[in-house]
Image (cartoon, rainbow, N blue to C red; front, side):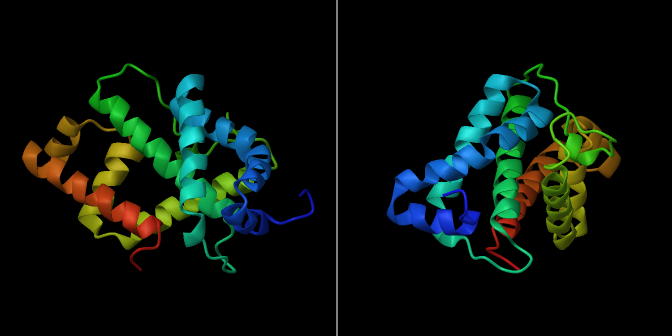
Length: 187
């Protein structure tokens, strides 16, 4: 299995689920470090990683290898989306969890990435920005404020000069659109 590419293992795992373990072995540690960099809580990070692997396996048939879209980038995109979802749930529950989305800060040495994984993290960061760039400006801006700049609903509503109900509806639409764009359902 060590000599097979990720895409080949994913394809094999569709017919034989036991083959998927090879991908887990390859990516579990790196995914855990990336998730820890976002949520700063080991138990939550482990949940995110487990959920990410589940989503990768469930959606394995949707993956199409292309020159600019490799398994690694696709998998990190799923990890980021899952991390965003956990972050959102924690904010709604009023958790006092400290988050640090190191993907959005230029750091000489990220907390969660070894030098060999930095290229993957950088690719994932570029993909998130690329997806937001495809969105209508007013929706992309709201996601940037909420997730990347960690602004509260109140701060965003005030800076955008919109009622709270409008903000919530736009964020809902923005998240839904982001998910569709990042999964390639829209172009």
